[in-house]
Length: 177
Image (cartoon, rainbow, N blue to C red; front, side, top):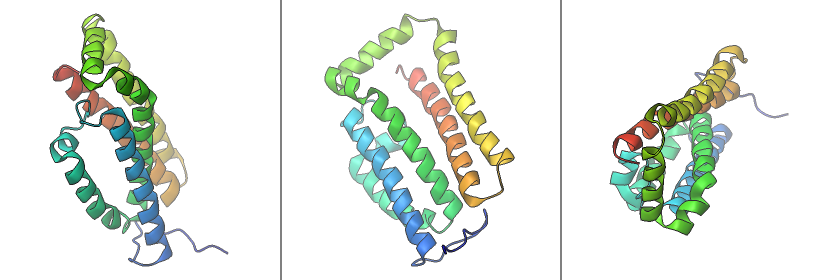
């Protein structure tokens, strides 16, 4: 018989199974995000998150190493961070092969030309549509699913991913891809 999951607002104590599970899950998600980012943009030229670009690889590893055990104190937050991180990693890997084969600078210029050659409303509408539709899936899971740490945490993670896609896409388009 497995131990019961805590409520959505439940906390974990360092050292107990739920905390270690949160540490492992969050480390897996954050590790996948960092690895997929490195595969796609080793110099962080194409990184959409300005804070991650500013921190660089060393700073990013340190911050993640500090955040992961703290996030695991709240299982719902650990599940949410893991979900968001895995979705970001999947998105990174979707184009990583192209970014690596072209090189970061050449890919950036190629993508900028695609943006310039397309109607602005279509570019923004496509990215923001993806963000909103993803967010709807997450919100639906949060609001219509059972009030349980796993379903709520996954829904929050999907919603956070949708928000991140929207925010970082707009930032990238404003700075010229």
